[in-house]
Structures are given as structure tokens and as C-alpha cells.
Length: 74
Image (cartoon, rainbow, N blue to C red):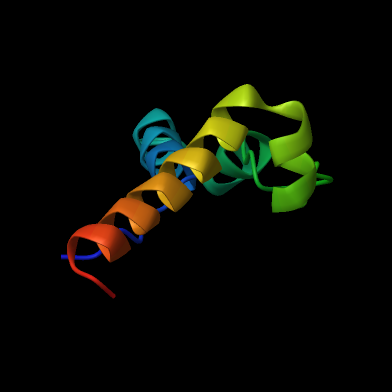
């Protein structure tokens, strides 16, 4: 089992966009493309500074790693 997973929600958004665009022609799909144009990209470290959820996620991950190391004496 791995802890690696997509945290940004992009896969879910892609699925929702595919469903919303079903039956539309190319021009209509291009006009509704959420990935077209400019996007706001935020560095993970900057996100942790401003987002409590991202900060707590990092703390949780480090705590889980520390407990795992203690329990399994790694």
C-alpha cells in the first residue's frame, strides 16, 4: 500500500469536465476548457504558509512517520 495520491483534485475535475462536455462539438468544448489560459500555480511550501489544511496535512504526515519509526524502531 502506498500513501501517494493526487492531492490537487485534478483527476476529479477532469472527469466532471468530460461529463459536462459530453455531446458538445469541438468549439463548445474548447470554450469550456478549464485548463486553457492562465492558471494560478502555488508552490507547496507557500501553500502551507497560508492554508491551515495544507499545514495540518504536513504535520499529520510527519507525525505518522515519527510514530511509525518509533513503533517499528526504524
